[in-house]
Image (cartoon, rainbow, N blue to C red; front, side):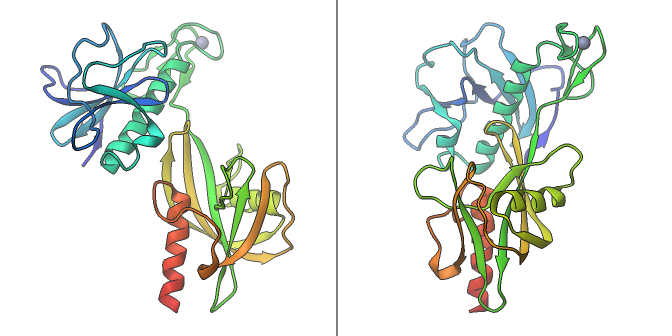
Length: 275
Ligand SMILES: [Zn+2]
């Protein structure tokens, strides 16, 4: 089990998991049994910026900031884009890689105070950067977003799926959007669905959540019920949307790496259990 920590005890660290992060890529050891996260990387960097992440399997876990312009990899290693690493290393290692990526990016982009431009330093006792000149604290950046599947009907339900403009190819998914300041998660669900497809929903129910490090989202999944209105698409964002039966879904994620797939899979299981 992974336990989050911000610092290691004094003394020898021993073997560790080293998540080296460059440009959205993670350094892995290449092996016959597939890539794995290195437990030691000798002399790649002289004084790396290192983030203590926590402890896993009797090893400490670190994220290391590798300069963007550093080319090449140590012998037996290669750089793998974070998305492509999914399914090739244990799922927990993949989520830790995403955590490392977010911490490294936060560290890189908060070297200076956003209010007075003085150089920041680590804040004692918490994961934050402190401005010694004006006292402003900067915490790791997280952007919460809701993602929702809407259903309608009784014995035979239909699910609302949409083809977003930024999706590659003909691909449908749940509706998602960033939470605005001052808004509850439930209000965000209702607003986003109204904006994107023009309908009203009720009975907004929490499903689960997922950190999504592209680049720093926290996806919060919901189910909701259709309450009224016709589909009217917000054309800047949505190319197509429709109601689909479980046996007639368009190309969409089912399970897999994203909470959109988990939402759809859970709904499909419910429908199968009814049949
Ligand atoms: Zn300042």
